[in-house]
Length: 377
Ligand SMILES: Cc1cc2nc3c(=O)[nH]c(=O)nc-3n(C[C@H](O)[C@H](O)[C@H](O)COP(=O)(O)OP(=O)(O)OC[C@H]3O[C@@H](n4cnc5c(N)ncnc54)[C@H](O)[C@@H]3O)c2cc1C
Image 1 (tube, rainbow, N blue to C red):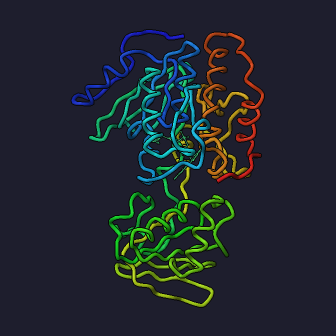
Image 2: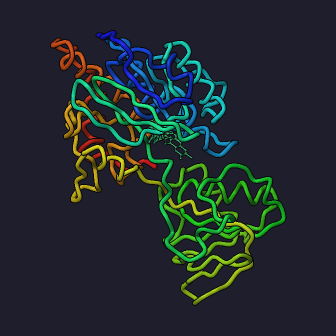
């Protein structure tokens, strides 16, 4: 239930004027992170009769916006749907552009309130009256108030570092977008999973000289079955040079050094894509008081039946629920988290008995929280 009140936020003078329009009321639920999961949480909360506000450090579906420009999802469209709103695509698997269009239209259709370009830095207060500190891209601070919180901040903002000299050079990137700037140049792709395979193929097809370096003995077994033959054949034909059981040990301005089973090698190099994965913002989780389980891949402590963390009133949703096992929760299964949280809100804020969840939804969520889901990347 919405609980209207007087102003519930404070901005410093000169801050974003859209804040007044976006947060001029006290929200029942503030969702931090406006990705597909966070959106699903806001939609389900609204449908249960609660007011909801989403806040994001970037644009709506900021992570998807930063995915490779020409990417195609691995998932068929109906498995990316949120709020039971159909995702129509002429393709068997939708593109990034189609997904961005879909989620934007869902936000409009469901009249979601989204405060964009405001980074959440910390929370204070308590269950029933949280204060959430944000800062916008000009450094202006604001405080949002909410009775309950969902943290759905994903993992895509923080790349796993290589920890080697030269990593800070501007030619080293952790996000692949387009092949065109690399025509006729020497490009190293580090990694052995889907992102690395797709980037290496795209770069090669657009005229870059590509070297792939992977610490494992071969491409990872989770590379999709329709990508594997393509990358394997390019490597076999020598069109893409590959070093397995190898590591990049140093990145210079014009070269990279590798440690390979045949010894050290130095290759000419213009650009490096280090596609070695990403991780949730564990520091933020700990700052908010959420305990991480060191014996269970740093999974944050939360109740699998409700997704409420050890901080009363703070729920977790989406990929952060899986801790370091970021390949266990994706849009396909994280999109159900909103139903669980909305059900618990009915009980916590209105004392209602929530309708039971469909069995498959409850089982999928419980498996992701406990870490029993098969790796599906
Ligand atoms: C290249 C690629 C392809 C993929 N393909 C598929 C696929 O085919 N099918 C599938 O199901 N999954 C796929 N995934 C995985 C999927 O996209 C993610 O698991 C999914 O986006 C997670 O959703 P989320 O809502 O939990 O997080 P995100 O979509 O990452 O949303 C988190 C949001 O939180 C915001 N945020 C972060 N920190 C803060 C902060 N401090 N303050 C405010 N906002 C913050 C971010 O800007 C972001 O918008 C793919 C991932 C990648 C990288």
